[in-house]
Length: 221
Image (cartoon, rainbow, N blue to C red; front, side, top):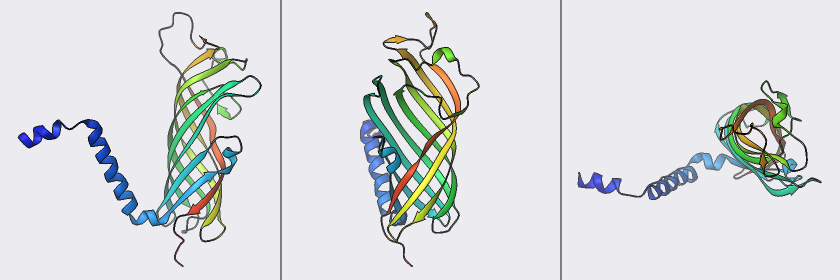
């Protein structure tokens, strides 16, 4: 009983740190680490939005991937709108070829936070959009968080044992909780509305680019 009581008194932060160390030790000691690729999205880099990823080969034809994207610009464009985005995705893919090249498709889930002027340019279908809650006037923006649930497809071409190029696009359902502002005034709800957040759901294209891929350890032939 005394031992159990002492364990319960360990701060949660210490337990979390210990758990993370175990996860990293398992990852780096795993044979999968020798079959990993790291990626950098050259297309998003052109608009100053870095996007990095890592892909693990878990079986012939199959991989698991995690990637993150971030933008931290306080003002962009002629209207000086905020452009803050961070997104993290995890995905399961199936490739045409057993060496993880050629055409591929997969499923993904993601989570992100944003403070941007939302656009409808990539929205495929939005059943619930209220035009009164969106504005492209200078000083208008939305701030909130979103979940992503969708599909990815693309093509990977290997240049040599170390390097490859990957073109991809992804989309699906976006579920957001947000607040809409015009300057410092909230405009997405009526005066006196008690809602902390507004909500929206759209079917949209929200991922894509051209990845430069580096194999950590060359394949054995």
